[in-house]
Image (tube, rainbow, N blue to C red; front, top):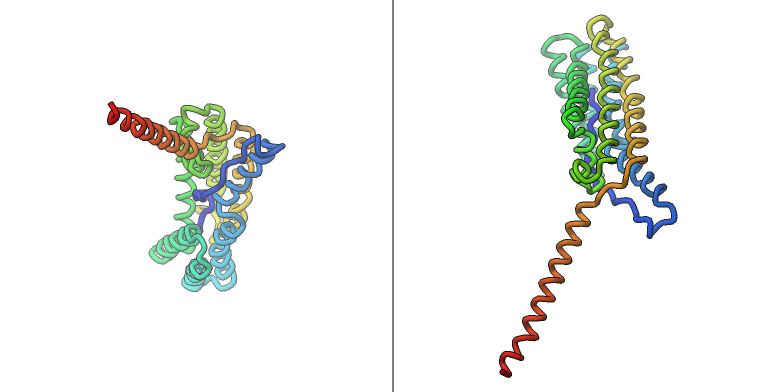
Length: 262
């Protein structure tokens, strides 16, 4: 039910400069890989994505009981949130999982159709696919908007780093088309297949398309120019302003006694 398709924005250190490392390209690729891994939740995020839906379809396959399956899926989602809270970890992925499962439970309970447990997640995936494609056509690819802060470049790639903008556009196209392909499989099954068939196919399509999209994003960004660290630029400008102010204050201080002597 939950979806790993939307990344979060963790704090990631920028790639080391070539002066600090004999292999700047390797460092940049490693930083890109780490940033993507964390932004999309890592292994734990993937487990939290799959587990509620897997529990739902497993229980429903065994006893065909919508209420038991739905309560179990919602319960494990809440448990994942509690575990993260106890460990004081980031709870965004777990909370998004709870909301996603909750919407699925509400839909299924309202209609009495167990397949509707999956419908909100499917609609979300379709909407996200369209968002990737539309924003790319508009010249502001969604993956760049999401990952720009991760690499501390914000929107500098739009006007100052055309090679990186092109990479973000390619990555957004990849995400959009992969998610559309996923929807092209799932929506016909929603109408024609039974709940267990839809559920198992959906579970099997949770991670592989996601990993493919992340891998293609890594490939495109690893070949792109390095990000422009706008935060470092702002800090340098602030430091330069302080130095100019200090120099001006020192100059004024030197002139004061001279005027007094005259």
